[in-house]
Amino acid sequence: MLYAVKSYVDTLAGITRLEKGPQHLPTSYVLLLTSVIAYAFIRFGVYVSKVPIGSAAIMGLTDTAVTVGIIVLLLAVRGVTFRAPQMLTAFTNIASAFGLAIIFSLGLISLIPDVPLTQGFRTVVIFPLFLVNIVINGHLFRKSLDTNLAAGVGIALVLYFAVTNVTDRFDPTLERTGAGTSARMTPSPQSTPER
Image 1: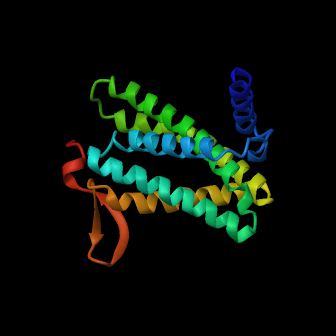
Image 2 (image 1 turned 45 degrees about the vertical axis):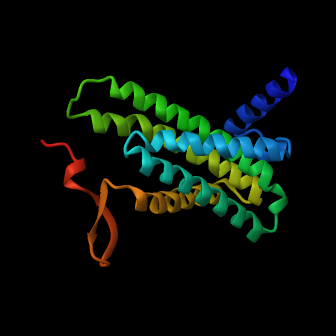
């Protein structure tokens, strides 16, 4: 059992170093289900830092459903749905690790007294994690869809923006700028700190 866990962690580490792919993970539906549930909880943890708990729960579940749906759809279009358990397991595990890093970073930032640079500091801390995560996700798509890294990173970015666009619909701190004239959202005056 301990050897299996060590082998699993070593494989995930190899994926993050872009040396291995999701095909090196075992095809286990129990592992897949556990990974997806953990991903949903961690996404909830990320969202709860910026929205009320009810909205965070909806956003976490929506994030998970859209992510899983798009990945399965991409694999189906490519004709490689048999890779879905390994791809989803790898994607959700690695995304969960980055989600935990974001939660930890936001926890540290919350300890800093309220200063004007706190929001900028938050962005500076999270943005490098986002970039590394996008490259690793691009690598996962490269291996799963038999494409190159540039195309994989492009797919990872499209997935990120699709998930963000859908989940932001449930963010009560954002309001639409025009009645049907624009899909762009802006923070409501209640959510922005006074200067």
